[in-house]
Structures are given as structure tokens and as C-alpha cells.
Length: 384
Ligand code: MG
Image 1 (cartoon, rainbow, N blue to C red):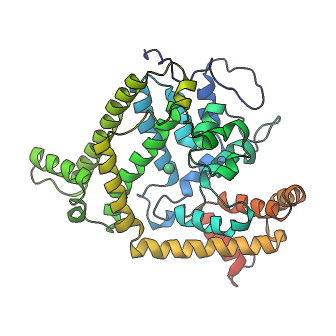
Image 2: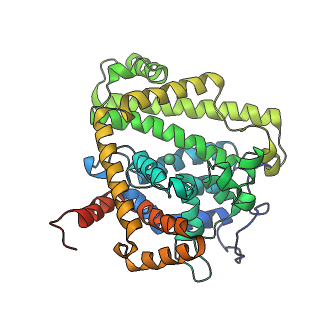
Image 3: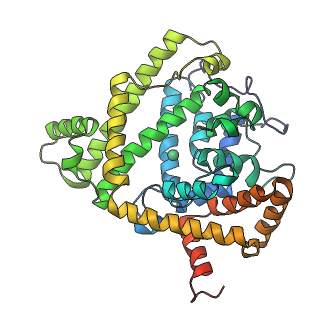
């Protein structure tokens, strides 16, 4: 038996609904339906071959966007359930939050954003929303997955003011400084907890960072010392895992305790009071926020900027630039259904529509598809 939902949790009854009216599901909640639609989408399956930090072919043991999203959902669900919030909604948002990511992780997204500079830019959060609102082609009656407002609100984690102005009620909060529902706030922090910790694991596995370096970082050092006290002499993979599970646990417990305190203090009565509250109500305590940031900073300096990661990023960016330039200059290089879409978008929006269609095509690619597509276009030995 699950505990009753808190009054400020998202609920079917208080949902702001779907863009296209549909009969309510019989055996599932509205948010379970959203989660199920996301799991069955094509964009979700492609996460398996998209980079988190390490490009897919670099090894089978590293996180991909798919396993990352599952880890986010795991952490998010645990927090949502403990706070009597809507677990299915948190799961749906977590599983969908990276659907709009380009191939090659942030390197790919930065490159595509630069390509799209004159055409409204490229933001992966907005692209995730575009995937679920427009790009998935699965239903007879509408484009996209027709998800609830609450799931879409959670997927749109960040958004520039310019783009927000064009998004109607979904964009309102970026203009007024409002918050999303608590389930979205949870998915947001669960994302950060997941990647910070799994990037430590992947970075160690790849040999790009070391335990000795990490012992300078408080979150890691505290867990390391505890493991050494409890299991003196432990080494290798078991040591790393015992450290990382303690790091995740400490962050999640802090998040739960501090959020309980914030919720008790603010005592919102409805999800709309959560939205209008001046600050997030799901948050780390001050000291944990600082520790979390220090780990993030370490990863930025020592892992994401490591020369081996940088070399891969540079190659990835070059591939994205070249793909974009080739397709933008000659739409006939696109597969025929994308040509049609590009022609339609260009007809409606002018040259920026053409650019958007090319960006949609590239953003949908997996790492390996982008590599193969690049070879097909640029390698003389590839004839088709
Ligand atoms: Mg993520």
C-alpha cells in the first residue's frame, strides 16, 4: 500500500490536462500513461546509443543517456515516494528529460546551438519538449505524444525568455519566475545527483581521474574514509561502489530531510501554491549544496576538460558542423520524409524553418548513426 498523496502533489484530478482531449485511461493514472508513452517512443530507444560523457563506441560499461535516464528515474522515484508525491509523474519526467539531446552529449549540443545561432538557437530541454509535442509520429489524431501539462512542464527544465514567450502557458513560469511542480523539481535534482555520481564511476573506470584526486573532494573523501573504517584494505571495483553508494545515499537523505523542512515551513496547500512559491521547495541543505557543487566543479576541471574527452568532443563538434552545413546547403541530401518536413517548415517559417528541420534531423541521431552518416557524406570510399 502506498501512502496517500500529499495535497500539493500532482494528481489526475488537479491535472491541467492534455493538449488534445482523450478519454481517461481505465487501469492507469494519467501520469502512468505518460510514462508508458515515453517508454514506447522512438526517441527513448535512441537514448541507448547517445553519449553521456563517453562516446558509445568507447566501451560497453559506460553510462549512456538511456542508463543515465533510468538512474535519474530510480533516484527520483525514491524521493517522490518518500515525500508522498506523484511517483509516476516523477518517473515520466525523469525518463523523458534527455529525449532532445543531440548525439555526442554536450559537445554535440553546443555545436548545434552555434549552427542555429541565426535561427533561434538549439536548447536540448526545448528539443525534448519538441520531441514529445511534435516530432514523435505515433498517433492518428495528433503529432507527438500528447502528454499532460505536468509532464511537459517538468521536461522543460530551462528555457530562454525569448523561447518561453512563444510557449503559451507552459512558458509562463520562465517569464514570471514561478516554479514547476514538486515532481519536476525532484527530477531536476535527481538528474544532477545521478550524473555527478556516475561520472565519478565512469571517470575512474576510464582512468581519466583517480581515487587520490577525488579524496580532495569532500563528498568523496567522507565516503572513502567511512568505507576504509568499515572495510579496511578494500580495493578495486568494490571500493568504488561502496564509496559511490554512500555518496548517493548521503545526497538523497539530505535532499529528503531539507525538502521536508522546506515543505513544512512553506506549507503549500496545492500544486499551484508550489508553483507560485518564490523558490524551489525541493532542495539540498546549504552545506550539501556546497559539497555537491564542489564535486561538480571537480568533474568539470578534471574529467570533462580532460584532453582525451576534449579530443573526442572536438571531433564530435566537427562532425555536427559538417553534417549541418551539408544538409542546410542541400536539402536533397536528407532522407525523403525529412526533405518534405524541411520544405513544409521552410514554407511556414522561411529559412529558419529549413534550419530547424535540419537541426531536428541531426538532434535525433544516435552517436553511431551520426558517425555513419558523416562517413556516407564525406568519405570518398562510401558510395551510398
Ligand atoms: Mg540528464
